[in-house]
Image 1 (cartoon, rainbow, N blue to C red):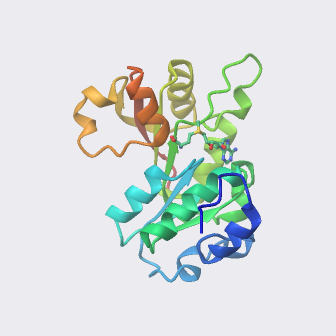
Image 2: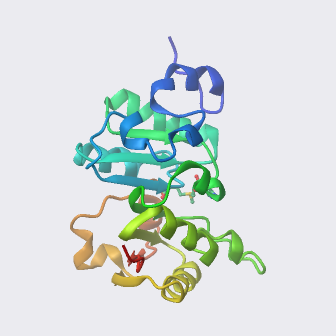
Length: 219
Ligand SMILES: C[S@@+](CC[C@H](N)C(=O)[O-])C[C@H]1O[C@@H](n2cnc3c(N)ncnc32)[C@H](O)[C@@H]1O
């Protein structure tokens, strides 16, 4: 059978992979590890805006003991990530086709150990900063669902978004580390897994910015 073209037959193709994504993620709130068959002690990592899944599939494959949840709001895009996960037989990566603005419906307080934000839409036009996934209202939500000391690992090509995000992280009480404005020529590139967008930007000679923001939430 010829492979179905992207954006065609999305519901049918999602149905084939239904064991890899959750149609009602709210039902898992506070129980992700149990629902996904992982010990309560496992780390839970969340990628927001996973795109076609290069980063989450490679990262989850390399860390089979951790549970990975990848969130993406575009169904045609997340489908590519889900089908890749199925083809590769990855058992520790699951998906949610939803908007990050509803995260509090899906995750309980202190449920997530780490959040990845890779090449989030920059929303650099005037009056749009509230839509940025590093805007303070989002950071407060991330802090709530993360454990004390939880980390946000953030990468972008966009200088304006990066400088804005550093300022928002600081304003919200996060501690910054591993800050670089040229990741691929830095010491932090050693363990770096490139995303689809990162690969594209690197080929264009655009320097990648990256930081780790650690939550200041107390136990
Ligand atoms: C520029 S792409 C980057 C994709 C991937 N992370 C990468 O680096 O290759 C941003 C992705 O985030 C998704 N996205 C943007 N805002 C979102 C939101 N509020 N909730 C969920 N996904 C979102 C978009 O649909 C898009 O697939």
